[in-house]
View 1 (cartoon, rainbow, N blue to C red):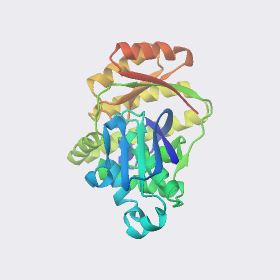
View 2 (cartoon, helix red, strand yellow):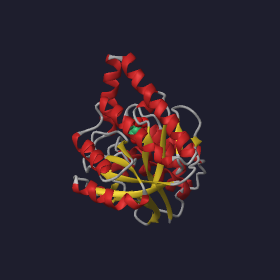
View 3 (cartoon, protein in one colour):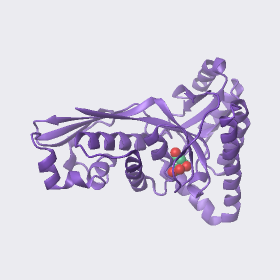
View 4 (cartoon, helix red, strand yellow):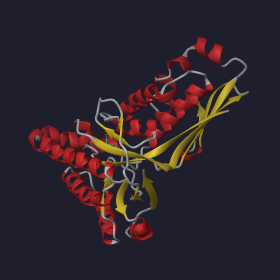
Length: 316
Ligand code: MEV
């Protein structure tokens, strides 16, 4: 049996503006993950078991644009070729692919990209097809494009490399150092919000007034660069104000929501040094920067303000 796992992720700074070429900072969240097991089976065919989404069927029963099927079919061409099947599946009548994930779906934590990365890695290992991290990342980006319209590629990159990244669309991966580890509380609104819609709405705003929104994206780009300096030099307490500024700009972009704003406010009132939405917005998750000793109070306050879940994670 082969297994592979991929973590969730948070965007610390720069979501949305990153689609327009500005930098963004993201970090893996290892408390949540997608896991894939592949085992040879006597039953002919490629059987998929994803209990979390109540999916149990043979590959051919899935529409080809289904996120799982699209990974297996469209971007792993060897698996579709009869020759490959004959040579690599020798002695195996079929395979059973089990997919589980603790990453909430459509919540800004990268659940789709994590399933893709874990699935590709498990397939590559099971069928002895060597794939570098760069190849896995490029592959996952193609899948993101099918399901998310115009993704920047930040989600698949941070999840593939499982390291904090300073990401600029189309540029080689750049990791950054964390001068002194810091603590983040992640609060989940419980509202699933597809990234594609929020990204599409920001595009409409940008198309209607490019000058205005390019200016907003520039402001976010400056926040991201300053945040990177603070993180690298261990001045993490100064990130709070930058998070608040970034959130205000995301509100202008219409990607926040009353529920996200309520959690952001509750986090700040309970002692967080700053808070913002994280990821596509509209629903999904927000993040709050906290002194470690305040983490539990902030978790409690987020839950009182309606968070369905809250996770404490350390960056660095
Ligand atoms: C989603 O995690 C981040 C966005 O900036 C979209 C993207 O970069 O593809 C909202």
